[in-house]
Image (cartoon, rainbow, N blue to C red; front, side, top):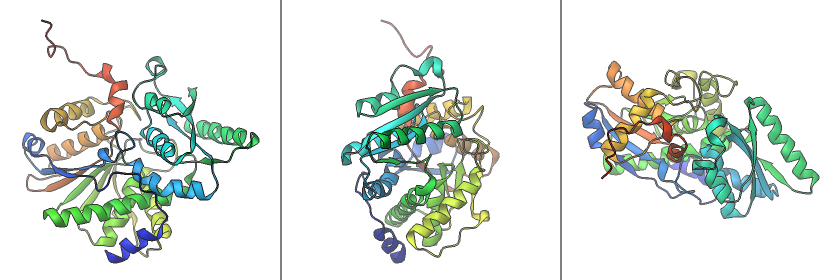
Length: 349
């Protein structure tokens, strides 16, 4: 553990997140599901505002952007991107202008600013909307925009996911999270059997590296919210392994992560990325009503649906202890309100 702490301290880092995030028992949810004992690692409470897992990553990425002399950051994703909302907030804190190429996934309902899109605009992002466009074409638009800014005399820094050069830094942020969790488990005398997380690359990769470096015995189970490949790229298991290896390089660690270490399910995506599933929506309702914790329909709701399904299949036993790493994203609920049926719940007086 001492070597991991030293390795992490070598990387330049800005203090942006509110850490450590809580490790919280969910007794009513655990009871409702008939076991196992479930804890939430509340990375929905990292800050930037309304939290999420990306905030940890920007602590390592933005020092690199500033060191490169950047005066603005260019990025892009879906219009309700948690990444872009946290990036915009982090850049506001360090004085970097943000330019976002946002893809409308559901053009009929997404043109009105709400959820993450609303906060992007409030926090000063310059937004460029695109529709009916695949991820490779969107990446091309991001780099075209960066070229246009350079032609204007600006110094743009292209962020992930368009720029894969920072994948090791993003994963290293979750190696640090694994160390934080290790300390909390020791303080609370918790011995988990599993850690479940919505992840398709760096979050799970960093956790894997950290857990292995620390000698943890719990299994890390990733619920991939993107489908069999990440936006048409390699399978998630390959990306997770690659990101763990790149984090090890960034940290100078000789920890070996093998394909056998990677557990990743893509069974709970449904019709595709950002398309809610009935099981995911039910998981959101259950967690909200038992614990007052909000999940989202794109990532954490589907991950919790996977966890619940694993309980029903008997893959998780009543005597097991499970950590659910909450990666945030519930702001998207405001853009998906029409998927919920509240008939019979509202009385007009």
